[in-house]
Amino acid sequence: ITGITSSLGKWLAEEFASAGCSIVCVDSDLESVRKTADELASRYTVIEAVGPPGHRKQDAGGVGKRVWSYQCDLKNRNAIRQVAERINNEIGRIDVLVTCTGFPGEDIFDTVSTTLMSHYW
Image (cartoon, rainbow, N blue to C red; front, side, top):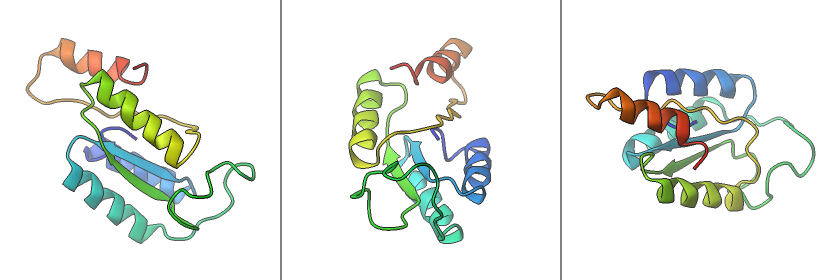
């Protein structure tokens, strides 16, 4: 979930986690994204088999880990590519991408461009 620290991002993360999904938290503010990930991890500690065997990489942070946090400037194509590659290498395949990015005070073109295009970059 990109924009995980927004109200909508947090709410969606709670919904996915309560349904048994693993959550990859991505946002631009490292401290906030870690705090959000820690809160989710403390509430949703039990992991069940989700997906086929081998769906997640074995070295993805320990047995039973369900929440990861990554910092990324979601306006920067290069940063998005780098974090996507890192997530793929460390965790494995992502089944659902949720983009909740929005930037208060910016013009609508920047917000729409980031929200609609960042997952292609």
